[in-house]
Picture 1 (cartoon, helix red, strand yellow):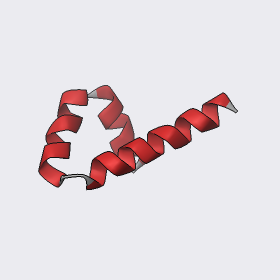
Picture 2 (cartoon, helix red, strand yellow):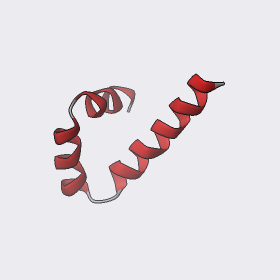
Picture 3 (cartoon, one colour):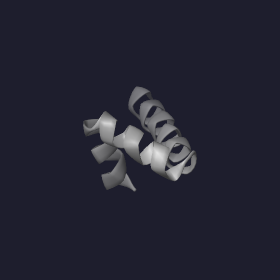
Picture 4 (tube, one colour):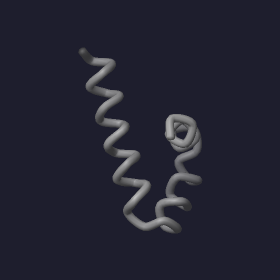
Length: 43
């Protein structure tokens, strides 16, 4: 999951392609992990 998130942050067009392919499952997890990482780094 962490590797997938890093790949998403590096390739946003690839992330959009996967998002259209998998629907709302991966984007929701991606947003959740992004929020968790942001809150972790700002604490």
